[in-house]
Amino acid sequence: RVMKDHCEEDLKLEDIAALCNLSVSSLKKVFHRFSDMGVMKYFTHIKIRRAIALLEEGRSIAEISERLSFSSQNYFTVVFKRETGASPGIYRKRLKERSGVLPSIG
Image 1 (spheres, rainbow, N blue to C red):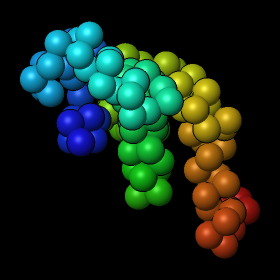
Image 2: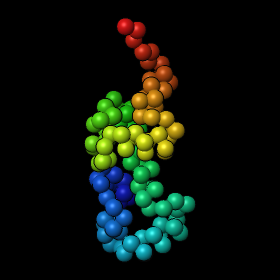
Image 3: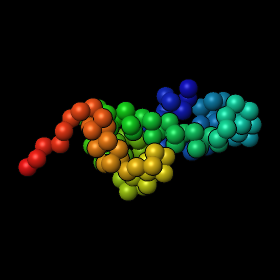
């Protein structure tokens, strides 16, 4: 819940642990018990799910990158592609194709 509430922030493992009132080692131990991925991997997953929602709202890639506290738009694109298999631009194009919105022919 803490990670979802703070997904637009640039949090480190220590920050997440502090927000949960846990030490880093305790957070890792508890998280490992209930998840098949590490804390920061899960936090990245949450950020990308939020990015997808923002893409669906029509937000620009630059705005999403900044809003989700990525260090650069390029880094956001790399992480997005690693998590989804497509760049944000390609993902947005596929969303439009699935929704039946045809690209305009200029």
